Amino acid sequence: MKEYFYLKNLTTNEIEVLEAEDFYIFGGEFKDHILYDFYEDNYLKIGLTLTREKIKLYFFSNFIENWNNYKGIWSDLKAISYSDLSKEEQLYVDDKILEKLNNASRWNSFENVKKETNQKRTNQKTKQVGNGEMEPYWSETLQCWVWQYYDTHGKRQTLKQRKKETKKQYWVRYIKIKQSLNDGTYISKSNDTICSLAENYIKQKHLDGVTSDRSYKRESETLAQIQKCCNDFCNKPIQKVTISEIEKSKEGIRKYSNNTISKIWALLFKTFKIAYSRRVILYNIMEDETLTKPISQIAPKKVKALTIEEEKHLEKVLLSSNHVYNNILLLQLYTGMRIGEVLALSKDCIDLKNNTLTVYRTITRDKNDKVILGAHTKTYNKKTGIDKGKRAIPLSLKTKKLLESILNNKLININNLIFWDYKKNTFITDGEINLYLDRLNNKEKITDRLHTHRLRHTFITRCQEKGIPLVVIQSLVGHVEGSNITNNVYTSVSLDFMEQELEKIN
Image (tube, rainbow, N blue to C red; front, side):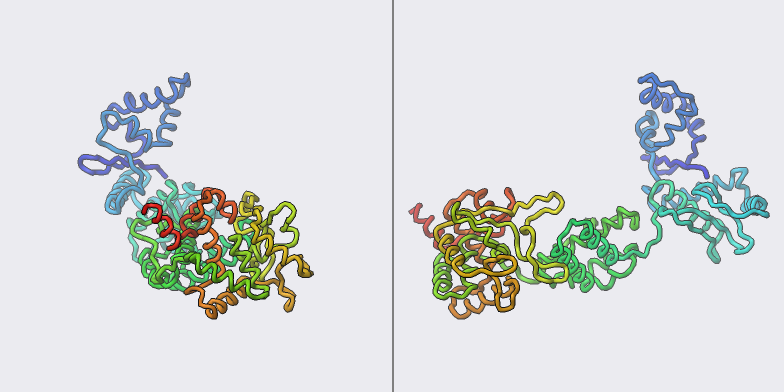
């Protein structure tokens, strides 16, 4: 099939449909001006001599760029691709091409093509052909026009003339598909859904070792949330999903927290991006300028550090009894460690001689939600193999005294952990500690709401109030150096500290 080129008049907006041979009579000066300038700039200057046929071949292999660079006196004519035309312009172009086909000697009438094609197919088996090696032909069996081609996945497709479809209408469809195959905009029909693509993506990352069991479980939970709030379209072919359907799903998405919404939105975006990269969809509708991530209906809860008085009250309560959970909470309050890191401490982590406590792992969960002892901290990067959360903490007098008292007890368990549930012969979990802390707070009336992460906030805030440099704080608590999370999330200023600072002014 012949290749067509499109020139748009920037003044009149008219579209000129031309074939390669048309350019050598176009304006009368084409060969002396455009072709020669192209040849001189790209080949003659570096000493390459080409035949005229070669120059023409190279020029038209990248026609749009070459025309727009060398058009010279035809500055009002811009070369454009078929896909850049509006729908009205495409219909106009299709008519022009049909007119050319009908005027050509080979395409005088569809009846001649029919006879010629049937003559070639007589007593011959149909051979596999590539795109462009076979023109549409008239099928006596089907009594309609037929064209066979290979889609972008290498699968053979057949374009048949529809009932009540005219020859002209069929030819327009044929030309559009042919053109899209040539310019790379063809999209094969696919039954891939948001759920199937996202599920495969999550599984493959886990199989490749990119994500941990815990991360795999969390991403699977995010997919389950998408299935719940986007059930109208998440199981239909992604090619048929519309922006309006995503807009409608926002009502259900907004019922989650902002943190969860961010995860849902990120997974949706990634899924559409995968579909676009695989040529399943023509463009990523999640990139639409009008489509914005929704905001949660749930009021955000800012985690505040304990005041100095509340911290002293809690410390006093924890020191007043010998409950094993009290030591866990005191150690977190004194060091700012994550609760999972505290629960994963073993004898080899404690070096009383050098006055250090080494943190290198955490209690976590596998993909089946079973509590396990992790090999690394939360910030371990599986791609690089670097664990920036691994650290050695200098022991304060309080911390050292607490650890000495803990080590005085008999610690006999399979993992040599300093905290162990000996009744159940298993790990102590963060859920158990938080339930205990909540009951303790309800009884002692320490603050409005208390959980283990608030103790970590408290430690970081006290460090900030005492003027400890940010890089030191990040090293103590296992944040990546340079991260904004230490300041933006974990730091709050107590009323007592503000009053002390204001006294400096007075």
